[in-house]
Length: 356
Image 1 (cartoon, rainbow, N blue to C red):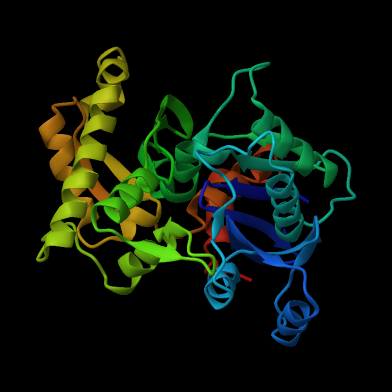
Image 2 (tube, helix red, strand yellow):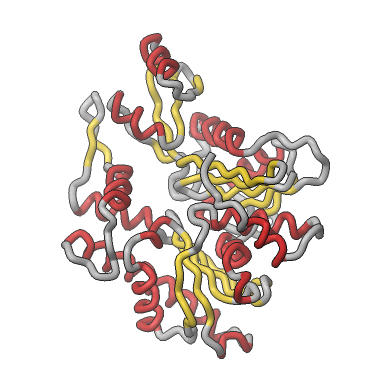
């Protein structure tokens, strides 16, 4: 059973085939820690909320942790800080392993792949993987899979560019990084990672606008989940900003995109592929790309940067938030040589991917 596992810094997603259907799962990479008291256990059990017992505490993970943290006035903890697990944080490591187990069933067939991305879009060189990468791959291997790490933006090209012969540009605007891939017939020509993303923007906004929450002991924390929810609920537009907040986000994302384009200039200038002489499609993925007018912002930043890339179109990926996972699954199934890219993308388009 080939499986795809997209380990983002803000959310984990998996995608696999089960009989003739696709099974998609997702979990926000957050958790909250509760006191292990009888009344707390009863409340969680009565509400059918899954929890785990760790070090005399109860752990609730994923989206439901947002509500539970508010109910008990407990902080919401990001699983991956700057895309990494702390060496001295055994709770985070147990939570991470539990989340992967929830998303990825045990495989009992030999020589099956799990094609995966790593937090922040990292692609470690052989022998240079840090402890977080080693831990994540080890957990997946314990589930019975051989692991294959893939660049997230290249996975997007497999998921989205079949109508252009898998040739074009893919951009993933993630929590910790912006990743870029130029592919020609599904083969990467340029892969790049810019090590800043949406998390830094959201933290700056929370600081600047004093968005805090307090726990029962009076400790204050940045209300990052609240800012994220506000962005989703109020349909913020960065294309034609009408409020001070929308203008703030437009400027912040324009700065991020310009920095990313500038970081690519030398690589693109040194690339002599003939495909760069023609306009190319650009596909965008990531939560930020759902903001109103984001495609216009990408177009404007590309023009301002002066980078020698012309866009024939700029569009948001079709299968969000499972676009990267879809590309990973396509790559994994192609590695078995049982199908062709065109047939596989058609198969995977039959059923709209949704969370389970």
